[in-house]
Amino acid sequence: MNDIIRAMEERRSIRSFKPDMPAKEAISQIMEAGLYAASGMGKQGVITVAVTNKEMRDRLSEVNRQIGGWKEGFDPFYGAPVVIIVLGRKDIPTHVYDGSLVMGNLMLAAHSLGLGSIWIHRAKEEFERLASAFL
Amino acid sequence: MNDIIRAMEERRSIRSFKPDMPAKEAISQIMEAGLYAASGMGKQGVITVAVTNKEMRDRLSEVNRQIGGWKEGFDPFYGAPVVIIVLGRKDIPTHVYDGSLVMGNLMLAAHSLGLGSIWIHRAKEEFERLASAFL
Image 1: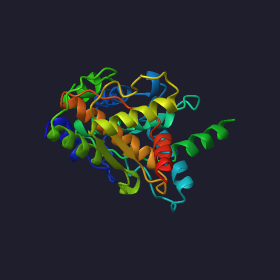
Image 2: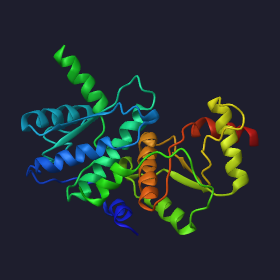
Image 3: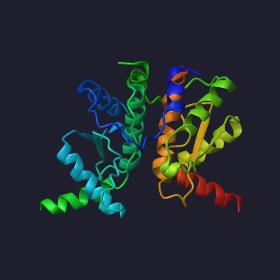
Image 4: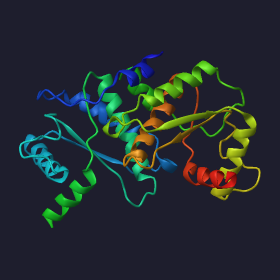
């Protein structure tokens, strides 16, 4: 088994994070790895946004918690100091597949740099709700 | 940049394949790498099937061609000797995301073993059509 397949085997979804901020360089590398993912017709319509600001991160967590229906005080981001948001363009028919491949790269790249991660759902409902709150 | 992120960067979607059959061991390793992908709630409801039989592979290619509306004689699998089919369970809400993560692992694992690959769509329509032909 080579290093790449071994990394896939060893990666796990993490549900408890230390609050320490990873190096900026590591976050950049992970984001870039996300952009290397294949996309339908090579359209690369996926956008990724890294949220490192604690106030914004806490706000995203709180909206996500409400949508998920969890009890007050629960952090659906499990204490992770960085949230990477993956957004697909709805006018690209393959945007769900494309975004998923980006997510896969992000999680594996994070693991390869010694950082844990987990895919958190509900981004769609969350950003629709946040958008309407700003209108 | 580490080897894993570099592999992501170097991987490309391939549109011309040699007819030589890869080693059985390589195909097994790739299929196994697919199963290491994360899945919603850890349900792992994705099934992968490797088609190496030329007659079956040609038949899948022909149905795919018809659905895609390409001209007769075109091979939408670009001459690849192996087709790996990724099937999700529709009763699992995250099956599209789950299947996409498996696809991502398959493509990156193939690259890591020196094998090209490309994601070919239309599996859904194809298997519904093939299933109805058998009923």
